[in-house]
Image 1 (cartoon, rainbow, N blue to C red):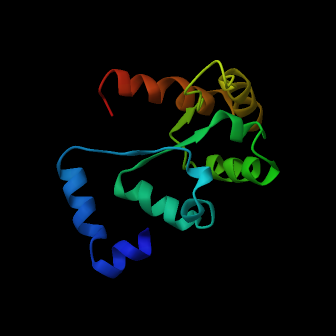
Image 2: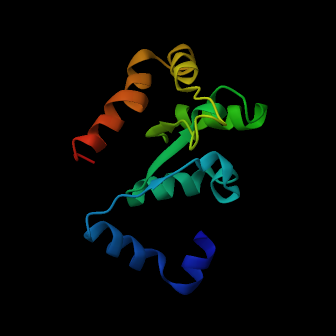
Image 3: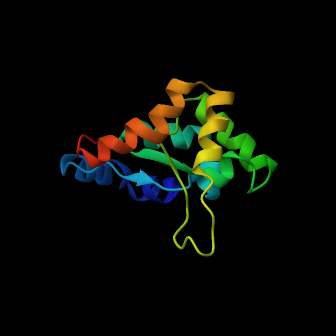
Length: 130
């Protein structure tokens, strides 16, 4: 994605248009995309451009594999995560592991960071402060 935007000279154009319009996108489940999974600098660049990053609860607790879990830990340690999602589009087919992920983040990081990801940042969206 990034190389294509740069090759066309569009990265800065899109950034200016998006941010000048008051938009700050949330990039969902960044642990799944090759472009963000293989290049932490790209995630940092997107964050510096104004994008928010979201990872899934299942990925945090290891339901998507050891390497995905480890990558999520790396993202959190580098303070590159803003939200955690359940990815439960249909609760009859998927169970939410938000509670389990919240406890895990408290254990691996701390309570304040967990509250930021699971409570304060989502509340800012509801309050239209993000």
